[in-house]
Image (cartoon, rainbow, N blue to C red; front, top):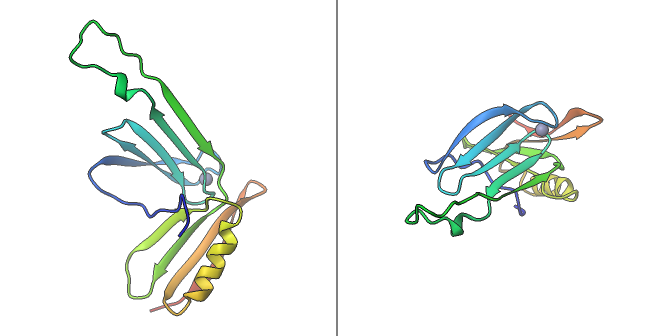
Length: 142
Ligand SMILES: [Zn+2]
């Protein structure tokens, strides 16, 4: 839909685990990517994200034993603008994602409205005064 909105993709390139979101305390997912040693936290309640990654993997030289490599890293942290869950009609998959900008919530509401004939379930959540507020846009029983 928009940048930073992506479905959870479970494959073999990373491991994942449940943690408590450091912002709202709800269940968040942490993923560790083996190849790049990148760690990412996504909360699908408040939309908080954190990325931890090593910035100097290129300078690592495994063939030179004398060379002492010190990893440098960077952390990108973003307070969320909320998160969404959608299930299309005749589908068992629930797509989840977080809102990238303040405008994403309105964009999501409008998109669901336009696609309401195909949507079985749609909701979004956001952090309001320290509590998660949940708005269910569509909830049908198939
Ligand atoms: Zn959260």
